[in-house]
Length: 388
Image 1 (cartoon, rainbow, N blue to C red):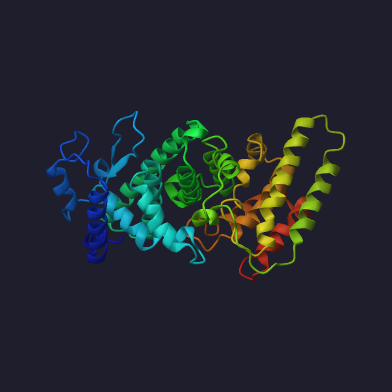
Image 2 (image 1 turned 45 degrees about the vertical axis):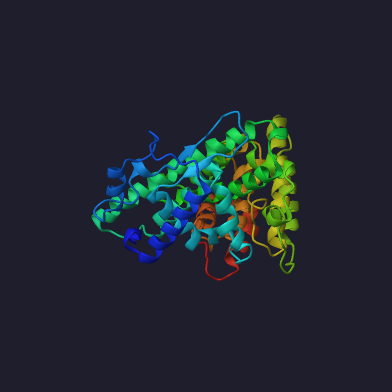
């Protein structure tokens, strides 16, 4: 595993970030009970100890006067600074695959995070996950220990970020300034990456790609309708408009329209004689939402926040139908795999969509294979993926 502590460039960046954070935090109190002691700090900087030691992982937050409108201030520890340096060096690119808006993720978002604890925790979480995934192949025992520490660190920051976001959302909408809502939207982008990325780590995977995807659906729904509420409420500033406004590339043949039409026909044919009107409505909603999701592929753009937010738009019980291996639910889910496939170049996605589709193909069997032929063709056309 890469030893970030001994990497001179990373340490220089970390120290620069540290002094920047100190200037942003004139109220920092080094005698605070929640701050690290000098002995603990020294231990963190020793090569024999891990920079990612869990006791030093969480940023100290100065909440100030609870009745004051002053922003919370985060005091960063060496481990936080190392993760933040990783973010600024490379992880931020996870949010900007085409290189556009990179400076916003690298600097604007980070500056805001200095006074926005949930946003900071989400940044630190995805940076830790990035390190864990990138360096996971090292078999050295000491590095394996560091690897486990980083995985735990990612989950710890992730939990804090989600809790913080939920607290912010539970506040009255009128109390949230436009700037705060904008950066809440940015944090949701990061949380989506965390939801998909953490499942690629062996300790967090169930061994079934389909079950893992259903788990991701539930993770994303953990704070009820977080993304949908923000998409409806927030009209981002021009600087952050890219969070909800996707730039389109060259228009490709919109075969997804035909696929959605075929899904509707299949559903209508299968549901004849059903007495379960509620189940029919669940599938109708899932197909309707999927239609808007798939249009990003037809536009030739990367499915961003809106493009992969389908898990939040389908009824929650749809996940139960998938886990019960209901054929119609599996067929709809197979079409969503094409969206995931278009994100395969990202470290946090990889071949996940392909694995889910292959599992669904086996569950449906040859008799129903034609129902997901569009999805299979959409993934197989590049010549690198083949289904038996």
